Image 1 (spheres, helix red, strand yellow):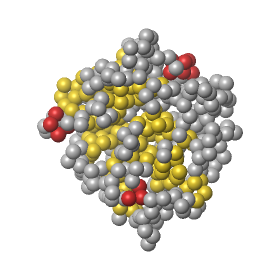
Image 2 (tube, rainbow, N blue to C red):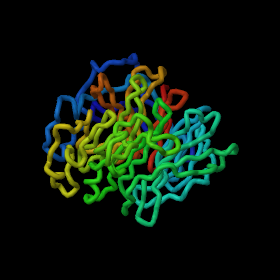
Image 3 (tube, rainbow, N blue to C red):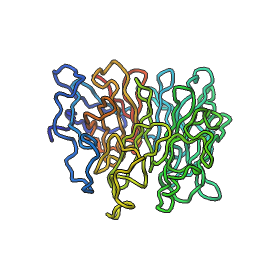
Image 4 (cartoon, rainbow, N blue to C red):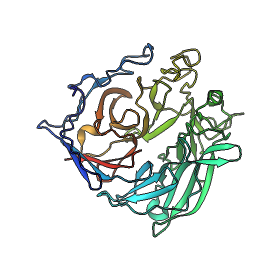
Length: 412
């Protein structure tokens, strides 16, 4: 095993009908710096010969977690889980792509599917997607989620809300509050993460819907494709948005120029919005989202078409367009993300954790002064597509995979 991969220990090949455990440990003290950084974790050749805009924008030095930790598979038969978040009592609320939610305890007891949600179009990359709970959930039990909604003209990325019933068997009074228009045919690039900002408004992202002919709409402020949005809980544009009052611009737009954003998280110290999105062949991005900024797709990218040709004019930089804080080539296939904010694992504090799909690992990203200074690959031997990740109330990380598994990753 290359020296830069995380030291995971001996893998126990056990049936997932029961909980499996794997431990990483050594005798070193936890560290919070990157003085022991080694070679970059990525060793494969990139898909293109593009040069980064600045040092450290890609293939940063590898780091290793020194605190002993372990991971467990708590449950292994979820139905295509897509989103996961913590409830106030510490349990976990999850979406299943096929159209239901489930609740799990942190020891792996999973309830029956929660019904009552609007029908989803689960073809391709669509279905029931990301979710979040109201900041006042303990009193109002409100849940918000993104899903792909089929209509006569095609499919929308839509945002809905509803109340979790007292018996936790259904969502009551489910209501669609926003539809990203225009609706498009096809089953790709829905975006789909949703969260609350510090002012009590919803932020979510949409993709370009996957077809080349849709790409120009990403750069148009009168459409909802390839954007992040900030809305009220009733689906109206949130006050103070960057394009408020601008002619021919949708007031709900927060940023533009995104290909397929599937990771959104607020930094626990600065409160700033961070985002991951899929590039084409190469060029997956980590962005710090500034209101009103344009993140470039499809005008600039560090990826190429799957056919091998350049995207557009093969530009990676252009005045007025934002550079990613970090990019991956070959791709990470970044899905859900979360920042770690607990004191239980001090060396992870304020680090970003990214669920990797085709890369089949969880990426730990060390960020200082808005720059990536270290990268680590966790659970790289599991062979799982990590779809979403969250930090639990107990300071552990919880992740779900396309294969139906629920993981707990915590200090030993």
